[in-house]
Length: 237
Image 1: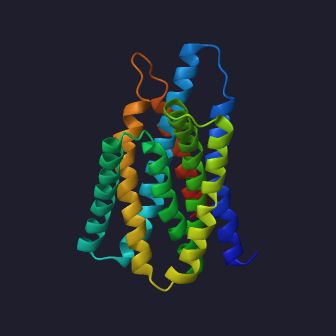
Image 2: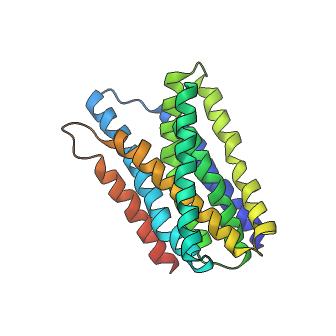
């Protein structure tokens, strides 16, 4: 398989985790209220752990060698500020699609970075693809519940929307592969921008929602998500 074909396959696989997560949320039926609540909060925490592992194991380490100290800090902070501005804008507009927006806002830059990583032979591409799939699955699950409760869209339509969004992955991945491979500093900036935004999203949206009063299981989902990231990192390196 050529490198560009691998980019298409891997980014599409990672993107398809979004409709799969939405489909799982659609079909989820647990008749025990406390167990259903604990499961949902555990999935939210799992997504946060997977996102943190992407930041700590791929996005930040792979981008620092190509940037100066000042520019690295600036791009990381810019990502956090941009995601905060998006959050504020959504809140003022009355939209309740914050998790959907966050999911797309980190998926597209990561796909760009993955395509560029394959173009210049970085070993982080495979790991990044796996982490993208790991984080998109719970994000799709949570974004489905968010939209289902706040919009009139049918379950089938929401899953179809998520399926369509998955194709943004190959488009962004091929863009990174063909146009950004010769500009490693640009790729590094994109990765740090995404990392800053992801970190903001984890502490603004995911971590607060993962907590349940008098329940101690959901935070282990975050540990599990990060542990899977560590295993993938060790397998690649």
